[in-house]
Image (cartoon, rainbow, N blue to C red; front, side, top):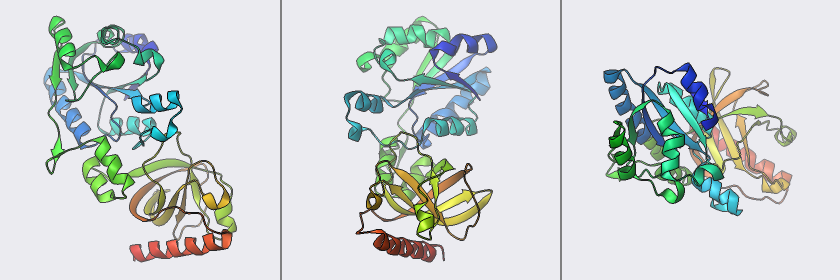
Length: 315
């Protein structure tokens, strides 16, 4: 899959693929859930019939994340189902030929719908655009389906609005998935995502506190995006081609006065070093919320209780 990184690279893309005709969709696509997959699958049918290639245009960060950072209201940032790098990986798995990373910044947020069309859409050889039923674009979200449809009619470009994708009479959305994850409902999230909720990350060096307590952990590098999980969880870990059970803590570790969120995983019955390697953590069940203990002895006692809970789960 070819990734266009920003409007400054459109000309490079055009020079490489000047004869390619595209069917495109635009959105945030956090989680690439079943609703998103439904759009891409429908695009595939059109692509095959017309010899088009699929293009997914997505923005990073999410608009609400951008405004929360700009206003200094970090607590209002919506949790992210996964980081943009994972989004690109999933798009590739869905056999999308091209994706377009649009940085949501002051320049993009202030673009009028007319400017967005001129600077982005009109420069690409797009023959059809498929959008969700709630899609809006441009400064103050002034652009809507009707605006895009009028432009498409004038330029012989098909504009199509997809119907709401529902399960159990409820709309499948990233918001619903976040609510499931925050509540620890991983079965519900899996149903909406069409796959288990996982976090894929590189193991980095931490404070070695787990090793000191006799419970070595793999600390995963976290993106700056806020994740929709917090607490202690039973997990399944894929590492070095093998699957293990485990117990994970996602939080700031208040007992040792931690400041920044850390995801640390104790992998059951694993011996070896994973530093610098990527592992995938699948969240299965929430055990408890994170809490501040009176000291390291009480913390250690609780960790061993959590490990025992995980062993019972897998037995």
